[in-house]
Image 1 (spheres, rainbow, N blue to C red):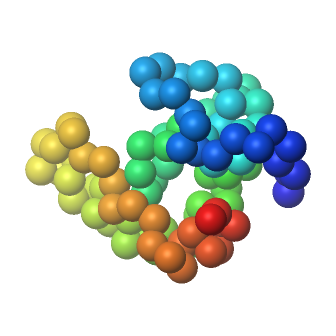
Image 2: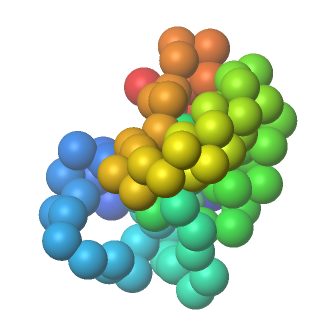
Length: 90
Ligand SMILES: [Zn+2]
């Protein structure tokens, strides 16, 4: 678990392209992926953590359903309070 020292939150992340920090833990992005829950660009450590989140299965199912329906603007189901707590988010 990385300790945050930058004081930045995901709200400070300028959208408009992938920067070189994870949206979730603010760690450096060497490899990245998009969150299953939302549009966050996250590092592989954060992705691994997401797999165990309470809402992950439902988020994955919803994502597959939207993809099958051809919805390319799907933004994800979002993170529930339980998911945020699990991931250590505010
Ligand atoms: Zn991360």
